[in-house]
Amino acid sequence: MGDIVETKPVLYSYWRSSCSWRVRIALNLKEIPYDIKAVSLIKGGGEQHCNEYREVNPMEQVPSLCIDGHTLVESLNIMHYLEETRPNQRPLMPQDCFKRAKVREICEVISAGIQPLQNLIVLIYVGEEKKKEWAQHWITRGFRAVEKLLSACAGKYCVGDEITLADCCLVPQVFNARRFHVDLRPFPIILRIDRELENHPAFRAAHPSSQPDCPPEVAK
Ligand SMILES: O=C(O)/C=C\C(=O)CC(=O)CC(=O)O
Image (cartoon, rainbow, N blue to C red; front, side, top):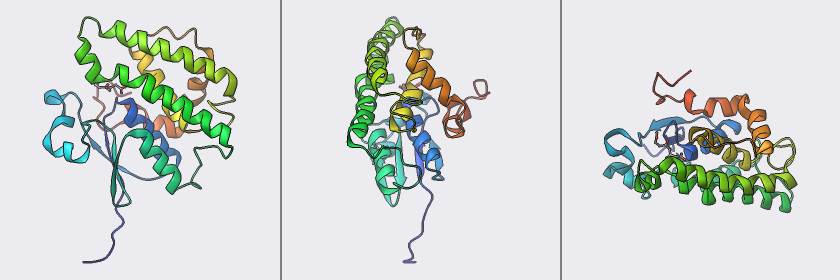
C-alpha cells in the first residue's frame, strides 16, 4: 500500500463513435498502450446514460480517458492533453504557430461545426424520417469549408506533410459522411487525405471494424 501503481490508461469508447475514434488514433500514433471499456450507445437506450457512467462523464458521451490518475472528457481536450504531456512521442501539433492555428481550425470546424450536428442525440431528436437528410446537409456544408481550408494548408496530410490532430478528426468524419451517403465527389482533397491514411497502422487499428465491441457481422 502507498506505492504509486502505474495503471494502463482506460478509454471509454464505442466502436462507431467518431469522437472515440479520434482519441484512439492519437493514442495509437503516440504508441500509448490502453485498455478499452466499451460503452454501448444503443443498448438499452444507451449505457452512457447510466448513473455509473454519468460519474465518469457528466455529458453522458464517449470518449472519456482515465490516464495519469485523472479522468478526462471531450475528445479534443484529451488529444491536447496527450500532446502536452507526451510532446516527444510522435508530435501531433506542428512547431510553427500559424500551422498550429490551422490544425486547431480544422479540428474545430469538424468537432464543433459538423460532428455535434449529426451526433446520435441530435438525430434522435430530429427523428427517423428526417435524420438522413439532416446529417447530409450539415456534413456537406461543413465539408465545403474544410475542403476550402485544406486547399490552402494541405500537403500530404491536412496541414503540411506531417500527421496532426486535424487528420485524427478528419478520417472519422469521412466515415460518418459515407455512412450517411454524402456525395464526396466535390471534396477531392478530403478524399485524397482519407485515402492516404486509410492503411496507416495507427488509423487501421483505431477503425470501428477493429474494435472489441464491433458487432461480428460488421467486423471484417
Ligand atoms: O448508430 C450508432 O451506432 C450509435 C452512435 C454512433 O454511431 C456514434 C454517433 O453518435 C455519431 C458520431 O460518432 O459522430
